[in-house]
Image 1 (spheres, rainbow, N blue to C red):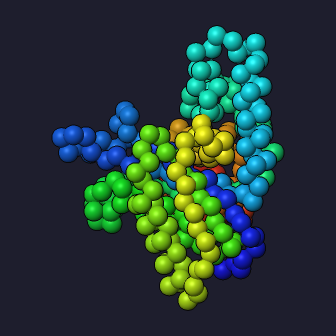
Image 2: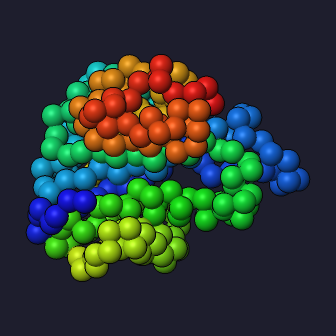
Length: 260
């Protein structure tokens, strides 16, 4: 358990993959076209979000004014916000080369979509599945600063703030029970769009790198940002337990994980 280190810490949270298990007929479609094999929630943590915002916004303006990208259809989206899945490779390269220079650390919970766990632990509810991962993501973090400001990405639905607040509270209660210590930190939870908060664009790129390693077996991106990753849990990789918790000591590599 770490003691309080900073007066104020900022977290930026987003997801990759999806929590979907079934189609409208109730058939399990995990792994089929349009339905991912994992749900991933990730965060970046920083004490100085202003520097990140200025760097990302500056690069986006620079790219938007670059004649080399004139006429590229995806640039309309890129001009609003970087999004790793949609950005063209030339843009993606420049974003990754920037973010490895920025001051933050990243953490991830990766959940393999196992139907038996989904039905038993999460009662077959997508929101319970998602919120359980959020609770795990924040389980040992919120006692370390006097004030925690948590931004989470929303894309058109801001009604998620109440359930996510419950997930954060679950993380606090779990910590208090484990360590027999009260969490007295102030916590603010703020929904925001990636276009309205540049730091969420950094999380998106970090998530995409990890997701790509799991879904596609392509690790060039996650290797490039490896120094930024302080913690990654492959939650339901039971074949590798307890070595499915990756950190600076046990560095994540696709060769170490079980096939999806």
